[in-house]
Length: 326
Ligand SMILES: Cc1cc2nc3c(=O)[nH]c(=O)nc-3n(C[C@H](O)[C@H](O)[C@H](O)COP(=O)(O)OP(=O)(O)OC[C@H]3O[C@@H](n4cnc5c(N)ncnc54)[C@H](O)[C@@H]3O)c2cc1C
Image (cartoon, rainbow, N blue to C red; front, side, top):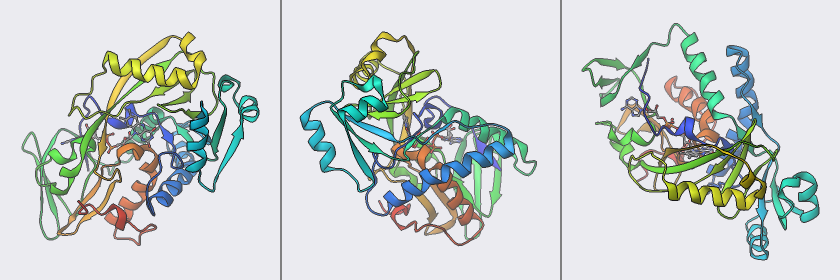
């Protein structure tokens, strides 16, 4: 049974869709988890294409971190991973002529982006294709975990009981009464814009933001704001995002702005997700708080939640993601 409702500010449709574990780096073993999640994507999108006919666009060309000053070069070189490669200005220009003003770039092979909007439509199609999955549209108000089961109550006072209940309610997870550990999850607004041209093949980061090619448009991001559950865009936010994007790729300033939108990231104090059961109430499982990397981690989180629900051996150590660590 899947109980959910749509609401403004949902992160998954708003995201830029980057698969950037080498840039949005997680500390400790979580980094290896991010790399494994990125590398899970090709088989994940193949599976979705097979089951739904929806081909989710996946870009694995690598991500560029462009240096626009000597200071930028030094900073990028200092934080380089063994898996990254430095491109000088000539190599960068040959790879991406639209970045020819760059002094060089760190190249993060295999990182890239997925079209998360198409991905969501594939997942929607997949979930409606299973007769055994009952879908209920509505707001979950509370969960009451007992020894071997958990009861879920919705706004219409309907109740359902299951052996395992998974909390995957994004930035709002901590608002569900009884999901006590999710109170560590807070919203962090991010604003994005899209441009009517697509001068790049690679995702590129600059000193103040990033640009992501998506079909005929380019997405530019982003802000990181603590403004509660307000998911509107602001003139200042959009201006900032445009400046950061056009600094990376100057030709975008000649393109038309197609859209601007915002979403609420579900962030935790250490920016790592909560994946696992509540140690006191194992019938309640948390899959939330994915912060800036929820699209990246989605397929692997799904695999692990399936393992937890079916009590199968886990393919990854989840101790860094324990929901009770705060
Ligand atoms: C601007 C922006 C850019 C981002 N870019 C990237 C990126 O490039 N790469 C990356 O990996 N990640 C990115 N992220 C982060 C990523 O989007 C999130 O980590 C991820 O989408 C979180 O997914 P989620 O399912 O937990 O939350 P959501 O996608 O927000 O989904 C939560 C769902 O639960 C529903 N819900 C909430 N409460 C209830 C309730 N009580 N009852 C019923 N339903 C409920 C909501 O309506 C919603 O449908 C970005 C996020 C933002 C905002």
